Image (cartoon, rainbow, N blue to C red; front, side, top):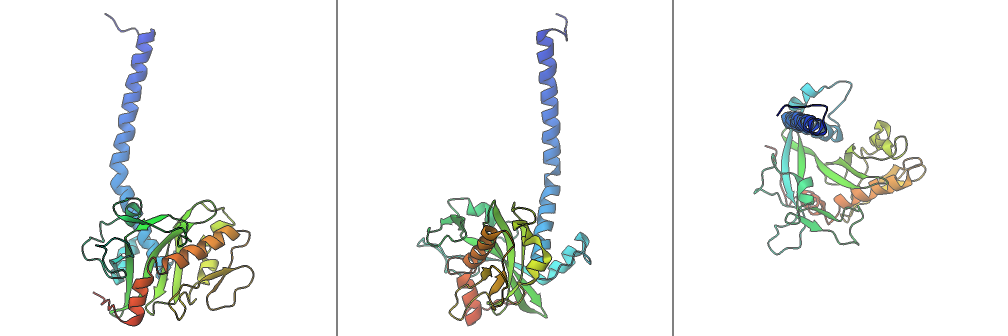
Length: 270
């Protein structure tokens, strides 16, 4: 029986073969590029950690500088508060998981690795979070100089993902950056504006009682804990205020920061 390409069966056969071939090509390219994608995602994360710590200048540095700059940073895992009986003491270092392979954002979506946030505590609007979080200890002259912490929470249109850096005193902000969001360009998207981010350096994020007190205000900010709100982006501004205060609070990194302030937890630079 001869193959007739202009017949109905011939047309379906050609279309099927083309679909299979194209699918195999797309799948092969996707699988082949996955290692490069993972490498680029890791590079992007490290650049943002460096940016939050004030160690990255895009006009001076390139991707080739990242490994050397990151040598002064140690990645650790922190036990966050959890309600289960077998949960480790909150604020302690987690030594059982590997920080090089642990994925906190994936854990935040896994019921076996996350906790549900009580509605009255969920000011960041994320509903669940991971039980163990990553932290980056920035070293200077062999001592911990600042700690970069991951933060995320709801803005107007999206969940904002970023990092906030806190000085070794456990209270003072050194920097902030966001690496993923879908806020409105020119409005909420101004969270990426270097001039807006620059005003966070030196702000006192934790009060004398150990409670977060960042206040993103309309108009001119003049308090030691105040940040100028984003013009025309009130909901995004409130979202940033809430997510920072949540992650620095008692339900997240608060116990870790309190251990640092009290001297109960000595984190030696390796």
